[in-house]
Image (cartoon, rainbow, N blue to C red; front, side, top):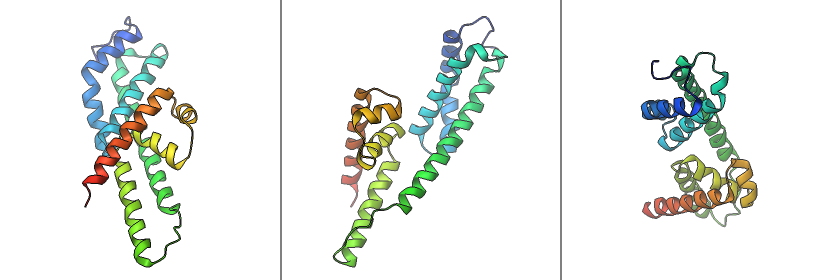
Length: 172
């Protein structure tokens, strides 16, 4: 690829690649993940990793190939995590002490609606909400687990709750 030169530093090279390749890499990841929000995070993580590894890249002209490979590998990992999480949610559904079969059926439908609405959230919002309400973690524990600040946890959780509320209110 001709846009990166061996003499460029990591900031210049990654900025140039980001400007020209970000959208194409997001499309690639979105096709693999079927989730644009998760794809954006995968691509951003790939750029961060490349920036960190810039000095170790043997052939700076192959940076785009490195990025593509990183995006595909990270997308695969995200799919594995998603599949594992979905399997876990299906098998770990808490048993409700239902007074009747109708009550049990309604509770299952409601829980399925919440899980489906969670799947529609961007990954960070979904992670923050699951860690808070399912994992029962504190903001500090969530921040540590996600590798973000407590303020970012509050922001992701707030936006996630607003999006969940809007989604669930639209359902019949």
